[in-house]
Length: 179
Ligand SMILES: Cc1cc2nc3c(=O)[nH]c(=O)nc-3n(C[C@H](O)[C@H](O)[C@H](O)COP(=O)(O)O)c2cc1C
Image (cartoon, rainbow, N blue to C red; front, top):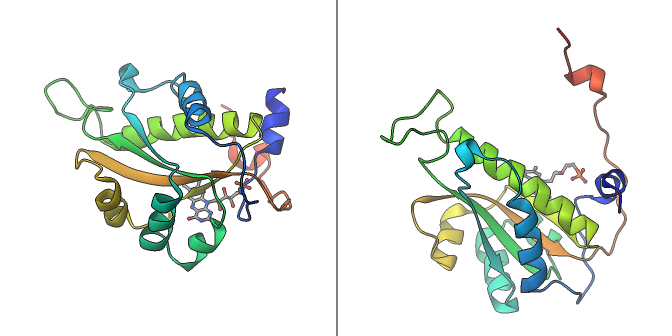
C-alpha cells in the first residue's frame, strides 16, 4: 500500500468488531517498524507494554479508563502502553539536560515512534485508538511498570466496526510559515 493510502486509511476507531488477527507477532512487527524512527542521539528510549490477554485487557479498561475510553475499547484485541525511559533523551552523559525541553525530548521521540507504529498497523489492516485520558498510576501498578519509565498513551488495537467521518484538518497555509 502506498504511504498516502495508509495515511488516508488510518482513523481513530472507537467501535471494534469481535475477534480478529492481532497477535504478539503482529505487534512485534509494528514495534520493529517504529524502531526505525529517529531519536535523540539514537537513544531509543521508547518502550511498549503490550497486553493481549483478555483478562488483563479487561482489568486495564476497568481500572485505568474512565467511562468514555472504557466504552471505546469494547472488543479490542490488544492494549499497548507507550512509555519512555526518562532522563536519557535530551540529556548529557553527566545527567544534565541539554536544553530547556529536558524530558520533552523523550516524549518527542516516543511520539515519532508511535506514529510509525500506528501507520504500520493501518497498513496491516489493524485499527487503533491512541488514548491519553488514562490513569497512569493504575497502569503502572497493574503492569508493574518501573518508575524510571514515564507512561504516555495507551494504544488500542483491533478491527473496525464503524467507518467514521474524516475529521477536519487545517490547511498547510494555516500552520506553515516560509522565510
Ligand atoms: C495524544 C493523544 C491522546 C488522545 N487521547 C484520546 C482519548 O483519550 N480518547 C479518545 O477517544 N481519543 C483520543 N485521541 C484521539 C484523537 O481524538 C484523534 O486522533 C483526533 O480526533 C483526530 O482523529 P483521527 O485520529 O481519526 O484522525 C487522542 C489522540 C492523541 C494523539
